[in-house]
Length: 129
Image (spheres, rainbow, N blue to C red):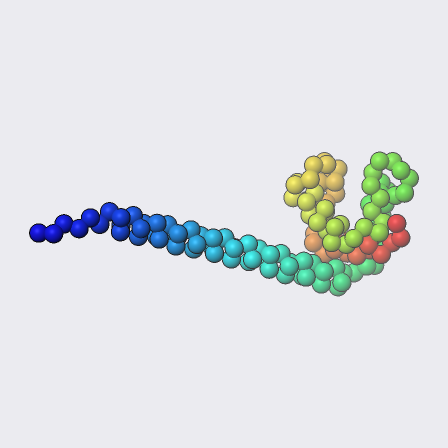
């Protein structure tokens, strides 16, 4: 009876399997990353579309409370005139979800819905700095 040592062959097959699994995991991670990038791009395009359709007059109406504190007076409170609309929306939603820490702004943003935030964003983005 001839004995064949299969250990080197089995070890080689195991290495190939590990390489194949590693390649599959890498491909899945790349796919997830690309999906995230595409999803983010679509969300940004959707946000830009929402801002373009926002009611600037409604934003002006709502802005009365904002400008009580956010004006050019150098009080340490940031001025929001001329802020990019996308930045404004991102910041306000972060306050609303309490990702940003400021009790006053969390309360103010917490009372606003998405339409109100985009209307304010469109309004403030048009004002000169």
